[in-house]
Length: 479
Ligand SMILES: Nc1ncnc2c1ncn2[C@@H]1O[C@H](COP(=O)(O)OP(=O)(O)O)[C@@H](O)[C@H]1O
Ligand SMILES: [Mg+2]
Image 1 (cartoon, protein in one colour):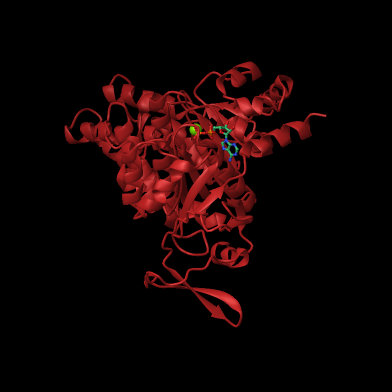
Image 2 (cartoon, rainbow, N blue to C red):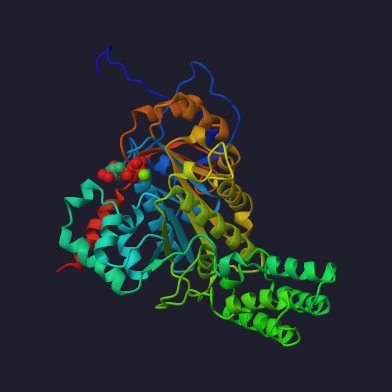
């Protein structure tokens, strides 16, 4: 090296001190600052590996500038919620797919990932997993392979590696296997008749002493007993209750109907309730091969059931639909979790700004989705309900939600304000964050409190291309 050679070295405090332990490197948390003018040394490859990599962890990328695979505790990465931030095209959806892929592998069927997909990317990016153990739900009409393919995006880079015939036979296989199912939004059965609505109606008769007041009071008692025994929420549409619960409720209603004058108004009202309970607006719960309709709430029940499909993709291109589906699914999921369902569920929200924007309104359902996601982030951990989210505009996000993420990946974000919000929300050194301006597609600044060997040590990594796994699958299956 000549005397004129300049080497730029960027340093960032990690909060750790290296010590020697019988010839081996050891690391200890320390708040001592390096002395100005003191000699500095680079960590060896091996020392770097020991400092950063989780033993027997799952590889998620190569550390930039080193030939080292960064291994993490993938369970913890997801368990303590993760975020992926970067400008459009930096590889967020690709990395999110990779995280889902790695988690599903690690869980070995002991958990379900539910992806809320507004862009129609995830069926293809998880094509192999969807075909072998996933289900895609959508309010769109996706009855055949062609409409399914038209609704989904295939990255150009992937398009060059697989043929249209391969894609077509994959899509046809999904449809034939019953892996593409309709999702019903809007009123969840029975014109939105809920237990609460029925009880309120009956209370009206009882309290106003209208004809049938005595029978109404009787029925209130019956319904409350059934609801408390079965732990039914009052805001659940009766059409989406289990067949057993509906049966028990319709027995109670029929019994009272038999005691009423068939020209009374209570009789008419209860007849409507009975027709809903007995299948008019009813639906079947998610059983494999069942051509019934599914609602976001019934999906939540499906996701926590023992034989749930490990991968559920909910494809809703309309943001309003996506928010409705996500908020209902999440609220129900948390409710079920509180009542003892243990199965691990990870909710994935790409384009998270659609679900948890900084400013929320009731009419476009951002208020509902934002509240649901915030509850998931706050309470999820103790119930094994997790969240991974990705977004291009951090500054437009609900900051309460942001602060609940214990791991995050940051790529290039051209807007200063987005970087500032990340630095603030995660107490990340702004100088470190500035280096993300130089990152290429698939390169990330990764910081994690729980999934890396040391807490919150920023690492720059290059993640594997998820499309490689997809291309490999297509080229392996078509022979
Ligand atoms: N880790 C990666 N390695 C190589 N190429 C990648 C990687 N991640 C993304 N890409 C490329 O960048 C394109 C955009 O990625 P995508 O995940 O859709 O970005 P975003 O969701 O941030 O808009 C992909 O089609 C892919 O070709
Ligand atoms: Mg994307």
